View (cartoon, rainbow, N blue to C red):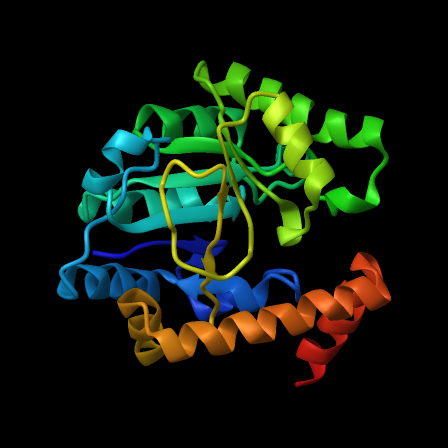
Length: 260
């Protein structure tokens, strides 16, 4: 059985709720009915839901299947995602940016975050303020990672050992800093299958509003041709980011998706 991680962001109840989101968030927002269908598809394909905790290498053979991850910290996780996870007996990692919790009313509160943790959800860091980490100074980077880890651990009374890089942007400096601060596993937006659940750097497949059932089936089956095509597209985007810079690339990408 294969191992892979899926990356989600927001799950809403209706099209009206989706349209009320920020423009850049809408492409990553699924309806609750769509998310439920995707969980059902995972079960139909006889795949298991992977444990969200960091595993030792000896346990890898017992931890195969699909790992569910959610980035940012939107309150829809509490209201829409958590009940469906419980319905399907699935675990997940909820990567949260504490700075967004403090500045946005549509993100989870400290109390809601603790409730999710008490319900078995693994809480991870998404850095403090969701900035592109490679653009920050060394001291700013340390604050983003260390402060978010400390806040989340205090809020949940549980260790936070997993990190998701905002926007999937990272380099060797970010990897070294995360390792030095005590993170056991970091998640990227790099596309690929999980070689070992105990590896420090983990790839993921981003699930978007337009991810169809046939496309998701290709992802879940580890379709080699689909995987190769997606990795090639990801490499082209990475090259564009290196040319234009993270912020300029992001502006161009938002402009393109808005007009397409």
